[in-house]
Length: 116
Length: 214
Image (tube, rainbow over all chains, first blue to last red; front, side, top):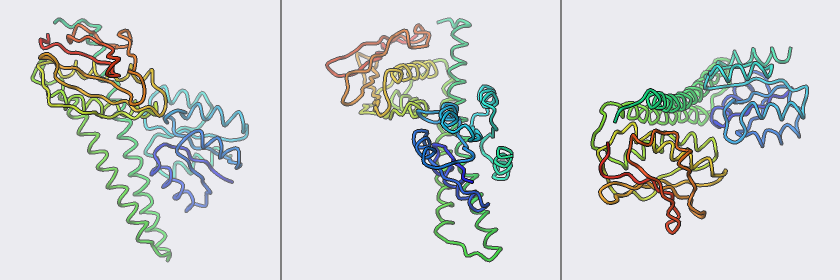
């Protein structure tokens, strides 16, 4: 089982991937949506963890593109905003939603929930 | 100049947009610090179980925290300066400082459009004006220019003295002057005496402030 992490904050997403690896979760990461789509075309990811606000391609748009190509992929949104509109959009997409900063245990729980 | 309820509402919306952008940046700073601190904790837990710690990894995590604290300090410093722009209705304003602060507060908006925003050559210039209104106008000016730019463009902002007043200019090196329509400036234009001109020979779009501000 592999996880894809996408966030334009490189220090955040790389540390998160490393911490997940310590918990036996194999996570790849990238800082943009275009690369995420290419990575997902080559690797079978069970869950994608997406930042809501990213340059060029935001989390919602990326989720739609990934879901169209990979119908079984599950999604978790991360946001620094915590805005009501973001929350509603994330919920409307049927996804889990976490507000930054995220406790690694909460992320682990959401990953397990998404896979259940 | 009397402020109408619509002007006040527009001012509040501008304050809200900047505050939301700043709070988002601070959230990201906290999130990176949280992960770096979490990594250090993970290394410590693994060391307790007998795994050796790589000093370089610890150093990298500590450097990340220190770097984010510097980043956060800069963001909060800018937010504080922005908040103090409402202290007085009119005062003598250092226009280079004001432009620099507006650029800093608008950089996230430019980043989201993948446009680099920077300051060009700016000789010293000051003017008596309302600092908050001026920042709102400059932010609208930059935001309107960003609408017409594409990913990878560089937007350079400058200011210089002009006939007792000042001229703020936008340019995109390697491209024609960015077109900014008056209608795209979501700002009560009466609040500051300004007019906009396209200077094709200089390759700039200019926002000119007259010497006598209301």
